[in-house]
Length: 66
Image (cartoon, rainbow, N blue to C red; front, side, top):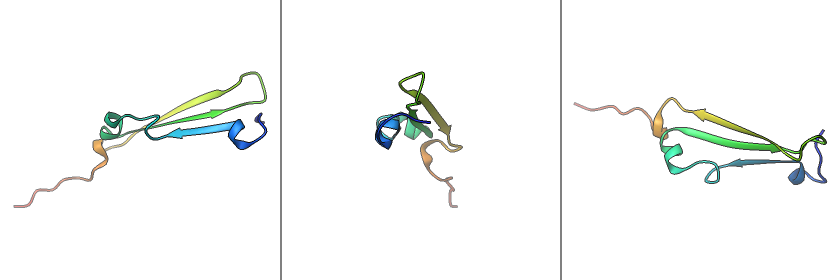
C-alpha cells in the first residue's frame, strides 16, 4: 500500500536528461529512477534501474561496401 492523496504523491518515475548524461546515452546506458512512498516506515524508497545495451551509441551495425 502506498501513501499519498494522489498518484503523484505516491510514486514517481524519472527517465531522460535528469537521469542520463549524453555520455550515458552514447555508451548505451539507460538509467531510470523509480520512487515509491510506502505507507510506512520510510518517506520514499528509490530504485535505480540501469540497462546496458549490446551496442554502444544505440546505432545499428555498420557494413562496408566494396
